[in-house]
Image (cartoon, rainbow, N blue to C red; front, side, top):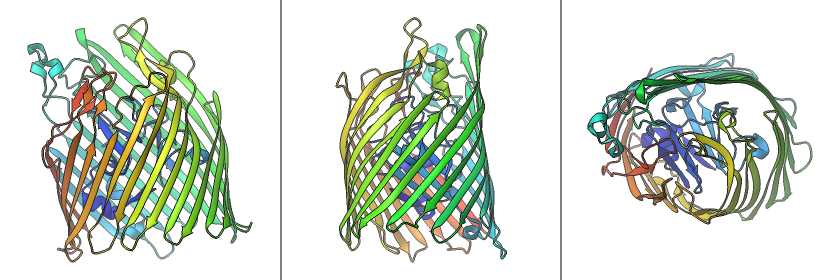
Length: 590
């Protein structure tokens, strides 16, 4: 597990969850000028839509229920100002969390009213005519009531981007002068009283499509898509006795995707996808048996309406489906001796009324000394076909599966912590998008390949208040198609990260820098995106003027030119990323 706090977010000047994840050991992010895509341990196939990671907000699953996507860019459900901490958990997690907990879990814990104790106003200005603002109020009352309310907005005109694939007079000489726009609006509330918590969140993000995917007309500002995501949840969490805890939740989730694609000959395609979900969960924790901590849980949800409509001049295609999903799970944390712990979990899912799957996870944790931990971990996980893949799939799709083995050694020194892990995993029934056999312009989703991977990770970190802190990590990963033995696309063999924070003036002024190295990656056309170093720098201050926080960040400070592999729907084999850019942010607390 890697943990980032709200202080880390402010000091490093992270703008999105994707910015943060780029600095985490073993993780890397790709960008197609619409969405940010997350990979780890060498697995980030194009078009996977982040559906192999499960994202939680205060325990609530927020992957959308149509694409299965976890959003980590400006389309993310929460503004970073609302985050108390983020926990990044590596490896399969379906034994407790079910679908999408395939490669890892990103657990976001939000701030409470007592953390805010008043009002906050924040605004920023950045490159590419980018502006944002957020207002938050939080308070903890004497009767135990704790409230948080927040609303924010973001707007960016974007850049004039050059794509050599469209370098003709008819396509504005390859310059996309219109279409890189990005804007969102967000709302969040959390009300806690006694054992009850009522929480809700909303985001709507509209993004241009400057790279002209899906054979769109280039440099047309009407090519754009809007993602809207919201949820409301009521949770009950109570200690029934010294040995029994109960948690129950009921929730409603909504997702809508609306996109317009302008095709040649003025053929306009309008795409609309909507999902609505009602769900509930009950979890019990028991510690009455000596040396054991038992967890039992039941989940049930109903995707009340999942619709998809696509309209063109040539006709329309639509679907309307309803699904019922259920799961039961159990886990036991058994302390065999004072220095040996066994953690074993098992979950059964009956998913989308089509698939059933059983997933275990077992960890043996040995503590030979006070400062050393050795962990042996085995786990499996599944990713069910999304509704999007099911509609456009070729034949009946089945869930992807992963089996992973891992050895972890942690050693705590006086001022440092060192972690080493080595892993082996196998992914089967990989769902991929391939050209249709009859019409190659159309992509079909199929269960096609199996992949094997092996590698290791090493990190040394230091966390000392009032002193220099940070981390250095290196990851080696070897991922190959099991049949062809060829390297997987978008899979760097080497990753390295360096994060440093240094106080300049008595815990009031900090300078922070982060640098990432990503080695070359294979593209869909069999070429390679060159490896690169990329560095960011942030100057952060607090309470020089009472209640005022200020930060100034320069991203890609050396103006490194680098590209990410394009997706199957792109004409471009490589998509160039942002050069040097900046952001200045001010926050005032009343």
